[in-house]
Image 1 (tube, rainbow, N blue to C red):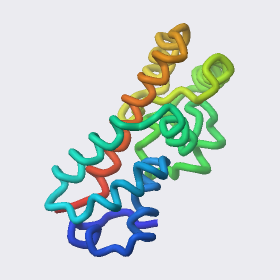
Image 2: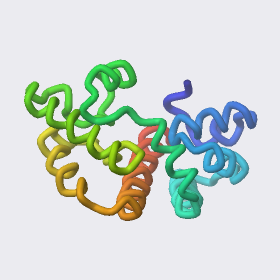
Image 3: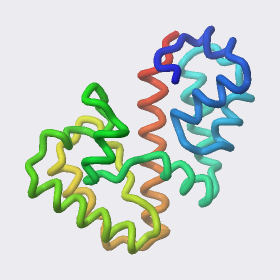
Image 4: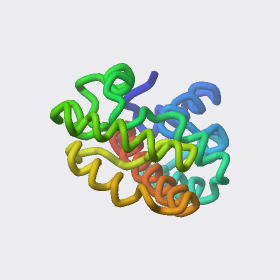
Length: 168
């Protein structure tokens, strides 16, 4: 997987490589294909602008597809497997006490059972306690509201991933 890349390198990737790069950013095939087709980009600002526009056009199926690229917050074994200690995407979950992690797991399972998709939050910099508070605040929302909330959070995650992996 390509981690850090310049705009020039991104523009020079072949279609398969670029699509793979974008799929690792956001697990939505249509979005990744459209990002690849939008090249060449002039700078990171252009990438972020196109990414936001393309994500705003996502259908429910595409949003749900993107959600499938995430580990459940609170499923510590899945997070440890998917994200190394060097990753900041899952916030400070690894530092949380067992009670908070257990509550995150239970409430994430309730959320999934209610909505049919995992709880999505841009966890960077958030403690497990903060994520639990956010989850509890959103748990009783209608499914359509949570689909929108999750899509907004996915957009934030995508923005962070692009900003951290692409250099001008």
